[in-house]
Length: 169
Length: 100
Image 1 (cartoon, rainbow over the protein chains, first blue to last red):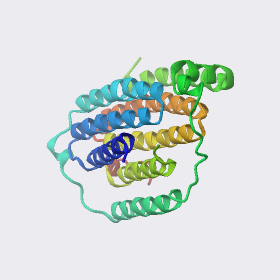
Image 2 (image 1 turned 90 degrees about the horizontal axis):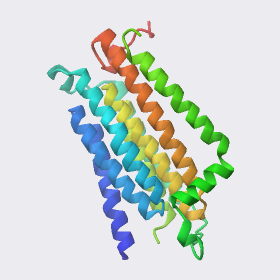
Image 3 (image 1 turned 90 degrees about the vertical axis):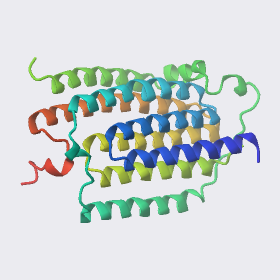
């Protein structure tokens, strides 16, 4: 087994176990911390996939900005002990968990039959694939309109967040 | 080289864990975190196919997903704060005004 394979399994185990911690921890702060761990393992997985730029963005935007936002909100809400008690088991929750497990089985069964194109990154591509320059070239030549639309979306989100969260303006 | 299916199955498992979190947990904040997990599973799928086809378009898609996730987190958490301010709870089972 090559180093790459060993690293894949280590990171995959890290991702799955910290994802389980996110949904099983009673305290939201513990969930948030487990989520930070999951994001870091995912960033490592992205590096294995030659997506260096996305891995950096993952750490900066997800593990940095978004998680700080989550922790701020957790602190703002000042949850009481009653909020941390496990809720009662209802039919909806049992059915929900079972259907998620069922979907997991179906997807694993289906995806294991996928045949990849198996393109090998070779030649000049080894120098540029996954770099910021290559991503910028693709975004600014092929995806210019979506890029501008996303910038508008972020502006709307900023204004919307202020309007929704502020008691009175 | 790691086969494409390994990454796809990992993403599927991650997505289902996130989905289980959305369906089972009743704390609105944890539900949001589970949604972030599902978005990351989508990202992982995009990047796995980008690697498999040696096509940087998947990286552009992942970039857009990260931007949309940031917008979603900002708006969603603002809504959670606003709901907590008016209702004093973020338990999803107690928020049922629209149902009756």
